[in-house]
Length: 378
Image: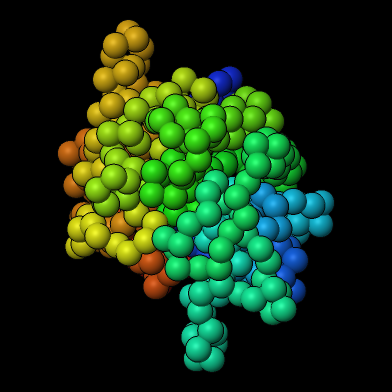
């Protein structure tokens, strides 16, 4: 049995979630809510359900906004009302019926909201950047007014608005539980609102939510605490970081590791490590280019557990140009991460885990492939 296809156990304050394997479908926006109301559609059922049938251990729904103005594009999902909850229920039920766990990435895009997504029909019309208000867009919010994103100017959040925002995350977590999700991943990466608070490149505040490391991390710590309090204690809570801005004077992997340890103490146990998202990209490229960031964060969590005399009980996943089974297996064998998040490779091949398990020498009895498809696979 390969390491990649051993069971995984995600810890929570009063329970654990067991996954059939260590493959995660990374959340990827579909830009497919044509009604622009945040309500999931049959497309989302088929897209996520196909990956569950294809063998993923955890299937994470795309960035799902906690408030309407938190959507990356007008066609994104949301969890700010009951209609959205009801529409998610058959999706989570089907994911779980296929043996996968159902996760959702709760998100707020902040100053990078109200944009045209990566859809050819928009690009063919020359549409990119911020969506105008008269085309269904809105005025975005951010910790500070900045032009680093090259988008429409944002409204700078007041302290009162920040505190209201924290409660919106908690309310969305309660709806996620009602909708049947097993797992929440907080989106703190890719230049969206939480990351905008973390990075000195986008946070120039001088109050308690800016300046020092403690000030810049206050928002995410408050969000994590509020969500953890609203989310059932038996269900694990995770977070996705941009491990580094890859820009001098920006957010660093050392700060990411420090924050991961602090959030672990607050009940966050699963850490997915990506990178960048603020301004132009200046980092490395190539297969597995973000693995070293995940390794750094995992080492910090392992060291913290050892210092406390406790067993290592976190779970770190890596993401970014992980395309082959052998590559993913090697990451786990080397101890650089505990699981792998597969994104674009899973867009091309929804059965990525089942095919990976076969290429690593797995047997038909152990295959995570939906049994209806075994004739083709074997």
